Structure formats: structure tokens, C-alpha cells
Length: 121
Image: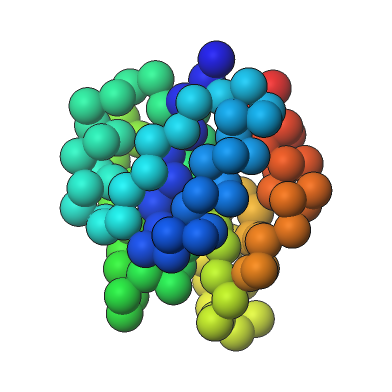
């Protein structure tokens, strides 16, 4: 069983992603803030994937992605981003910053499941 970190302030989305993680045989930790996510990542070296909602307050989602990529101990962890509010240029920027995939909201479980399976074999 692999461990996935879900970072989202959207309760319904968090629950959907957590249930999907469990269906795929993984455990999931759920947090709603950037700083908490970074602390959890530092304390749990066995986290193999981050799924982050970039609709977090203001630029917190983008900041989280950048913070993960800047830390040597975390920069290899794959990141899937989700959002229902950003534009194509912002998606391109997040992918350039190191996100592996983008999943639009509302989340389609089959898309997210396919990406999780690719990143967490």
C-alpha cells in the first residue's frame, strides 16, 4: 500500500480523491493548507504522490508546487494538480513548474485513476 497526500480545501473533492485512492489500494492523507502539506511531506518520506487542488486560497496551490520542487528531498515526488477555476495559460505554467498532470474539476474518477496508476505503479 502506497501513501498519497491530497491537498484540497474542497471537502467533497477531498473525499472523492481519498475514496479513489483507497479503491486503487493506496492510503491517503488529506490536508487543506500549503504549510501543513509541506510539514506532512517532510515527516512522511513514504508519500509517493501529491494531488493538489490549485483552487486553494489565492496563489497557495502554485506556491505549494514551487515549494515542493525547490526542496531536494521532495522534488522527485510526482504531483497531479486539479482545478475548476484556472485558465489554460495557468495550467501550462503549472505543468512547466513540475506538475505531472492536470485534472479539471469536477473530477472524473477514471481520468484521475489513470494518472494515479501511471505515477504509482
